[in-house]
Length: 271
Image (cartoon, rainbow, N blue to C red; front, side, top):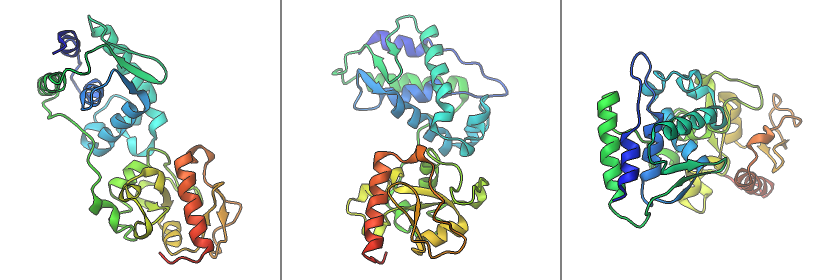
């Protein structure tokens, strides 16, 4: 067991009062999960923190950061500063400086082959959660197969866990700029009925956020977005072909899904 790393976890200090901020413990939980590593992507840790707060709204609403308190209105990049602050505070409190970081990576100077570290670290994290926050260890919810199968059902799929994952990238309907959460729904780009790999159904890159009217039109194949993000072949009078997705969400993965749907639409594939 790496005693210095355990010591650094135990050294963390937390202020408990009106607000609750377990972000450093959420971060530590992510870092020590198997397979434990000497180098972890900051993006993946940020994603883990976002999902934990998004899936535990009752805890997010007690956070001192207004963006986390209203996390459903914000994306991953909006809370990146909160991770930076947590990393800085961690390093200030930790006597052994086992953890270090740069713009892309978080580094742990530990023996990653030691199989006892994860168990011991989780025991300490559990103790700190109980001591400071009277809470069990917080983790993101697992996205199950049943959560993504019935993607034509806007009220279950469109409002479920998958929506919270898509919210990491987009928080409004790109066609009408609707921002009210109650009026926004997640849709699959490539529907579950034609996904080749089951993991594609859970991939947030295979998702878009639309208002109810436009979500229903998209599901009914009244229009689609091409690989450049622009509306193509719209059969809906309210949807102009000059409308487009925000270029900031057009990752390589999302473009692949858009290309796949475009190809199926051109072949008149029924979903």
